[in-house]
Amino acid sequence: MHYELSSHQWFPFINWESDRKSQKLEVDLYRVWWSVAIKLFFVLCGSLLSRIRKIHSWCYDRRLQFVS
Image (cartoon, rainbow, N blue to C red; front, top):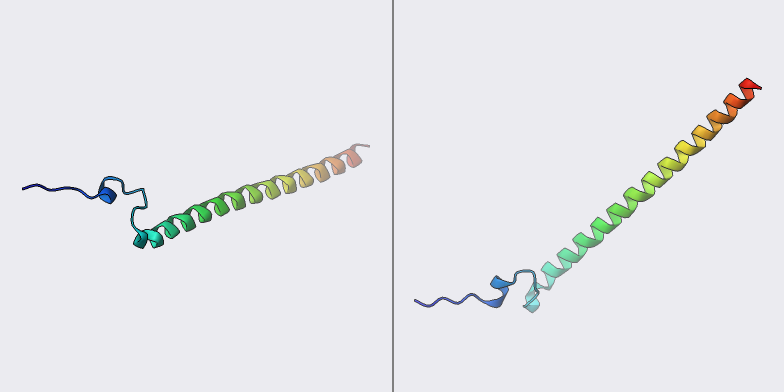
């Protein structure tokens, strides 16, 4: 008995058929979601760091006022 695998079984990551557009859209949405999540993470870390710097500089200024 001769059994041949079709092309999309050999290469599941290549979009061979037009009815797989929904799957491709799903992958694209997944990629977009991850890129947005990573950017949001970096933005939040940046704002947190700037806030910590502001608080630290404010505390440093207060300490200088107490010393002088």
